[in-house]
Length: 168
Image (cartoon, rainbow, N blue to C red; front, side):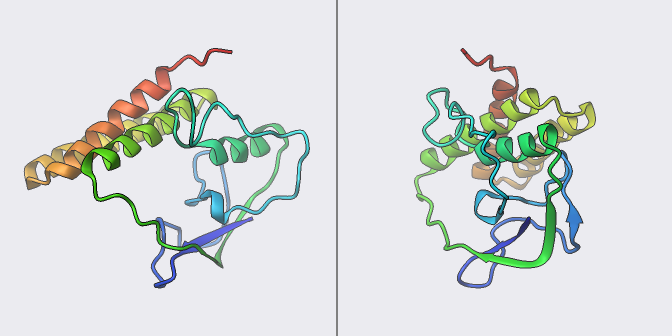
């Protein structure tokens, strides 16, 4: 089961659907680590090569990988309940632009790596690359330098993560 994340000020922590639904591989309803609840499955382990502290700079995606493994290999049905609210404190990110851009890049490498590892559809892959490319152009036209750079890091990270070959 999963639900919506909300901070202590009542603000959603991500984009969540308004209607309850069963998750699919490509529609995960904003599932984030702190919003996921599972029945224990002792056969499934986290891929320790990805996520925070990854020696490969694949700084996110460990919980998504776990979720996808449960869905693909163990046929778990995971329900998103729009009425379930999980409170999570505000993360006070660094105001250091370089640190924020590096974090975006590392997280994007994780998203790209998961696209390759879990063999997502061509339509999904295109959407994952086109959206930040459009964002890059929009932010450039608006003169929003930071978000333009963030979109560039997003595309670069996803591309590199997608093409990254993990050493076994």
